[in-house]
Each structure stands twice: as C-alpha cells, then as structure tokens.
Length: 362
Image: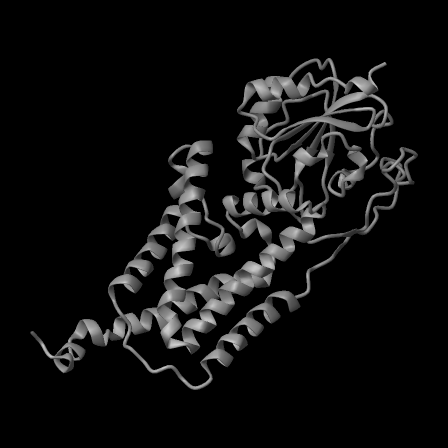
C-alpha cells in the first residue's frame, strides 16, 4: 500500500500544466471573447432561440409587460455572469475548474436545445449550415460551436489543474469579479436610434398626424431592439403595442374599423413566402397588411405573392428579435388571434377565421 507521501507525488494528484492552462487561461479567454461581442453589440439576436424562449416565458411568469426591458436586463445579466465566471477562473484557482465545468455544461445544454429546434424547423442540415450567433456574424454553426465547447469540457474533466494554494483575499477577489462583471454589463449605454422625418413631395404623402385613435404620429426615437410576445396581444388594441406603432405611415383609414389580417414577414424568409403564397395569393376576401422586417439579405429576397396586400415596413436601424412569419387577425382595432407557427395549417386557418368575442358581436 503506497504511503500518503508517495500518493501525493502521483501525477493524477499533482495535476497537469494542460489542465491549469485550460481552466485559468483558455476557457476564461474563450468566455470573455463571447461576452465582449455581446457587450459591444448588446444585440439580443445573438442569444440562442431556447434562451429567448426562456426569457419570454419568464416575463409571462412574473407578469412583466415591458418585454423589451426584460430582455435587455436578461441579456446584460448573462453577460455579467460570463465576465464574472471568467474573472473567477483567473483569480481563484480552487474555484476555476468548477466554474469552467459549470458554464461549459450550460453552453452545451443550450446548444443541444438549439440544434434540436433548428433541425425540427429547417431540417437536420441546419445544425451545420446555420449560425449559433455566439460571436455575431462570424459565429460558427451550432454543431461547430458544440464541438469546441465539448472538447474544452472534456479537457477540463480529464486534465486536472495543478493544485494551488488559495491566494490571500479569495473572498474579496470573488466579490471583485462580481462587481466588475455586473458593473461592465450594466454600465454600457444602450443605443438610441433617431429617425429623420422625410419631407413630403409631390409623390410622397404628407406625414401629418393620423386621426386614428391610439396610433398618433410615427415615433422618431427608437430603441436599439424590439421584441414582442405576440400571444399577449390577443384581446388588446393593435395600436397599444410599440412594435405595431412602428408600421410605416400612412396607415389605411380602415385600420381601426374593419376586419383585416397583419403579416409580419421577411423578404428572404421561405416560411413567410409559403404562408403568403398559400393564403394571400390572388383575390382576398379580407383586407391584409403585409409588414416587412428589413433585416434581410437582399440577395435572397423573394417576390411578394400578395398583390392585394397593403404593403408596409418597419424602420431600418433597430434589431427585430422576432421569428417570422407572424399572422394576426384584427377587427375594430383589436387583435383577435395570433399564429406564430405557419407550418400548423389548422392554426393558420383558425387564426384567419377567428371570431369576435361574444360581447363584441353585433
């Protein structure tokens, strides 16, 4: 039986330089790189879809109506936690391995959920052809990011870092990491976008205030991003939602009186094109407003199938954290039904045929 002194000298107990470099340098730098991109852009579209769904569902759970504020706060909190854990790995040797294992496991779980959702919606090829969004426009596909994070996690598990004594003031270093992480994440100012009104010409309608109740004039100061929980719009005035008030003017004079459908779409979105072609091609029995979201690749834009739709757009500049297409049925200014899954044909048909609530029928 080996003595305690001999056991302490075994490599498995001493740890390795590779393990130390992984948890004290490689993983923290990897974490800081992703957090820096998110902090610089403050773009919620960089968050994976499962995370966005959790944020939306948590807003419903806590009764938070300002989804823009909640998403912005959630994004900053995630950035703060990533910076905090990276600094803890660097400054607290005894906590470094646990922090690295924890955050990499979270990343892998999110990536698995992301790949499952992408494959279900767009086919299995989406997991290696798309983008995980973790590093903006240069992000690898979800499968590539999964491979990188998995290799790092396996390295952290199988290569034990060299055991180091805790430096003096370990508790203070953790507090400092928390303060720096949250301080940086919440001190970065959010961008504001100002629209310059277009002067009317002989061919441009006068952008004078409209007379419809609740719509008012087109906003000129915009948020850096917009998100919407469309399900919560049911039973509320369309004009009461900040995203809806961004629809380009002039608005149809029947928007507060008639029955109509609203389709939020992207010109390069195949699902949007299919919805419009299947249900809004040719002569329309009910009026329709097609609202284009401008953050598209023009090279992949497809022709508009709906010739009778009233065509509108949202302003360029903000990020629109919205999965398209989104179909709404509106009557007398109130949203009656919403469909966010255009592949569910029964749901599309039910949304198009949504009746007025009994108290409103005349």
